Length: 118
Image 1 (cartoon, rainbow, N blue to C red):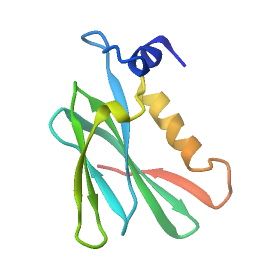
Image 2 (spheres, helix red, strand yellow):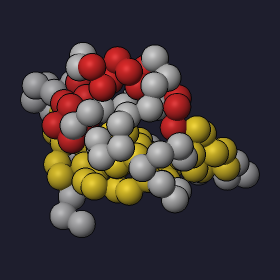
Image 3 (cartoon, rainbow, N blue to C red):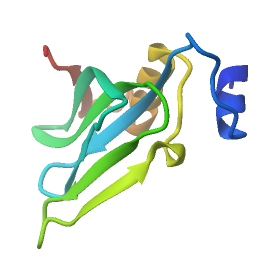
């Protein structure tokens, strides 16, 4: 883990000019994560296991304190605003993408992640 990530986890904010990334996860039919002001989507990746679409991952740049809007897609569609302090932070886009690979069982023959052309 690099110094920026350690600093973030310790509650220290990154220096001005340093980019910090988070990963927003949505599971079709269960919940979706939506960016709010201060969160800028950079890349979207879809996770498939066989033919089933399991999740959508959005790597987003964090531009300060913000909240992620979590919308439950079942029942009454409850909405929660979750502070980004509860999200794992990444110093580089590459670190965020490696995190997605770790979440999806990268290397399993039926699991695949594909970048969406936005």
